Image 1 (cartoon, helix red, strand yellow):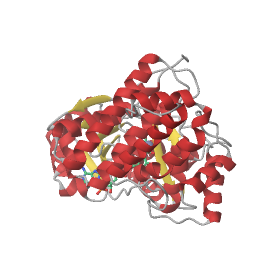
Image 2: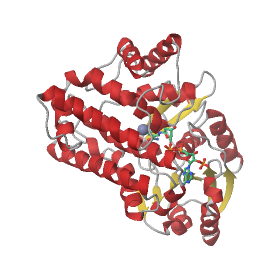
Image 3: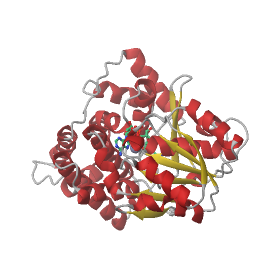
Length: 392
Ligand code: NZQ
Ligand code: ZN
């Protein structure tokens, strides 16, 4: 067991109708002038934005709006948000949407509270020293950004997708009504479920010593996500399944499923961020497309974890030896991804990258991570390239 700090300052307000409390939550945090930040239209079409506006009005909180956040949120909109916040003397940022809107809100919060170019924080040149407070009304269970210390932004100049991790950006509150996720297209529901599963898998596949309690929580979470995701493919309006998935999304990325460990592997996330940056693919689908290849490339470096996973999470019951059981576990994950309509290769993701493009992604991935990434097995540029090749 490693030393750890567990810090989850986000107040969670969970359940039906909770978006009506948004204005009161902003007021509780001392917000007087809000930037209402949202995506491309779903929150407007569902009537959610109007309900949120009403709750602000009821608390006599004024606001300005900036919509138009796209998946793999762009730096150019972040710059516009920072300008608007400064111009309008906004003191609270309210994200209504998913990971992309939340991450964009966090970036605006950093940019408005600090000096200089906000991209410096993502490029690793400087560390944020302050942030405006951010609150969230969550509309898709996926990224865990509603409780995480992370924000991921895509810089259109060079199509570079990079993350910045710092506790300053953890949202002050997260309103989570599972009913809001019932309007999601099945593809987005599936992408979200993969991402949630992966946030715990990234922490679970590690060569460091772990804690029995953490492993138990992680395994329960992974089994729950798999079983509820399967229900949602048949019954998208199943409230209980939506609720379990939504809460799993937050717990999977607020560090609960990794405490006492070494911070996790996160190589698949690194590999996916290059795909998202270059080809603008949905994050969850990109993860599904590379995971199987990553697993087959690394499992011999930490077989005990893969064996335990196959037996306790994927329910593999027989095999003629440890290696066969592990392979069956990997196959079971891929079968699960396919059952959600998710890809298990780059081709199934709709990509046919050239050798040069694969090499470029491997180079950027390694550089982004400072030369190497991973815990189950430490990966260097040549390993990353080999995994991209396998994933073709
Ligand atoms: O823009 P709208 O119209 O709202 O459409 C969105 C978007 O097209 C739609 N959507 C969201 N809620 C909906 C809905 N459609 C109908 N009904 C609803 N209730 O779904 C699409 C995807 O939204 P997005 O916010 O992009 O999804 P997600 O939450 O998966 O976020 C993905 C982003 O988060 C980053 C990813 O890299 C990616 O950029 N991540 C952020 C993390 C973090 N900050 O901790 C960790 C993750 O590992 C991840 O990297
Ligand atoms: Zn993710």
